[in-house]
Length: 123
Image (tube, rainbow, N blue to C red; front, side, top):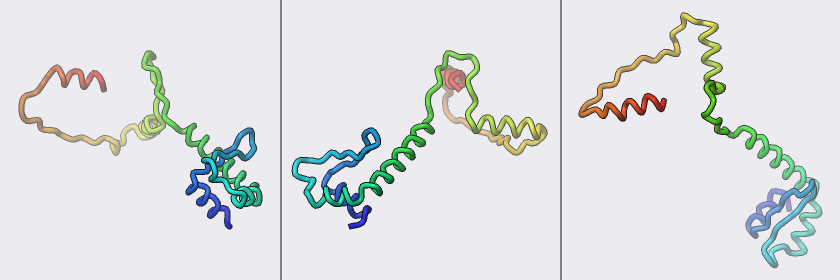
């Protein structure tokens, strides 16, 4: 049985593999982990450990890339990567208007001036 097949079988039986202090661990419903499956896990232990460690490092990198809210009590908030990029482009080519996107919007009906004011203040 290949490691991929083993992982599928374990998943189908709701058996979860994990790392605990760098060692292979598992959680299984009662009676789900047979002697045959235990033997397959032992035979493929190094590959399973490698895949779990790779998954853990990938997950850690994904967690590090999450957007974290910044407290709004500061006067100067840090710029996002995109904002820094646009600022740099503006500093480099100040006469370039490539990123200006003028447009017009026609509103029909009654205008709630107070709601519009709050919207602009929020922005």
